[in-house]
Image 1 (cartoon, one colour):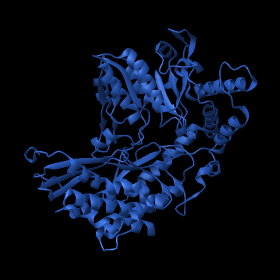
Image 2 (cartoon, chains in turn blue, orange):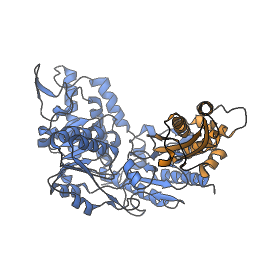
Image 3 (cartoon, chains in turn yellow, green):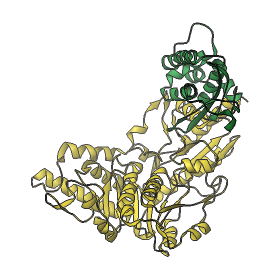
Image 4 (cartoon, one colour):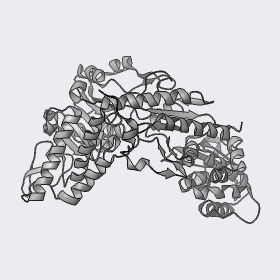
Length: 414
Length: 146
């Protein structure tokens, strides 16, 4: 495989080429949402300009075209995540809705008092709050696999995981990649451990889906949730992979048109999955544009993207470690890390850091990163995060470091 | 960087580094907590009301330089004031941070005029004030249980 021409790829992303506060934009917030290549924007526009119609039941030309495109998007998505059957892909608004679907549908139907739902301390709120709330509703017990290390640098405590995986555990949900720590969990290993006690596994792949190969059969999970907008696709579209037998046994999540086979005044028969879980007019245009994003990422190569992101994050972590009073979360500098770095500065609060960096044209994220319990455990009110994608460069990391040096100087007063 | 020096004036940096009246007030009889769910900033304000005047006031919490400096400066302003006077001082402060119009008389609160150029930070500047006004409206607490 030849190395991609990263500089040429950068030209594919129109949003990147602008000035912010008088400086060339340095976009280091792709873990929140990725920028979109022109092919994705073109696909979106092409659908609305040339093919727009509602899907299913349509007998006219545009409707048939739209239906074909939508189902082709399902097939392409199945291939992208390694699912054997396109009927195992449910389109949703994104990771959050996918997880809510499993919690509300599978959780409400299967969980009861005495059962345990197991998640981890590094979960994003989207893979924490739905489980917490369904546990409260069903009387199930929620337990957490701890993270290890004063800066969570050692990741999940696998010994604790094995102790926690008792026969009462009905479901184990975990993030494939942490959005704060720069840690990617060995999803196949975690699922294998959970399977020994018969637990259903749910993988939150929001942070990995666009950054490395993700294959549900290699992972061996029961469910996998992901968002389009973090993988260079549009907002408002994402997916849930679910094993067919599980999906077909689950009650509907939302009710209405599109998901029924027969409706009588007092009873309704529902379609099998995936349609059962797609009530109402689906997000056809964004599903079609998501295909363009998947094609784009596969043309670049997801292995190559992973290597690029990791190299930049490692470069950044090493340079950041030189700053006085810095605390880097997740793997120690020099250790392997996924494509992001979160850090806290002794003298400057994350929001002040983000405001300063923004004046230098640098987009960072500061706050609790939707990881409030984890931040509390680490004793931090907030941290600042720089996250990288295929369009970022070493020069941008260098600009970040220059900006941060000035911030540290300003706030420490030395 | 001129906008930023407007935002982070010496007064603000000073209050951030050496906050005044920081810490829980054991004798407080009015307490309120404020937080900023989007960014996680937190501020608790402790007031000992004597008659209708603020005899003592303290704050603690965590947050950015703007929120911490604002809360610190606020405590120096509110000591000895009535609830109505506190409200008037807040109205004045709110006007400064939302319009950038500094008062004519020389005052430390004028340092916060730069905040108005950073709309996302106005809520940081007013966090402590909201907690203080809520504390003044709150039911009396039994200081001895604190």
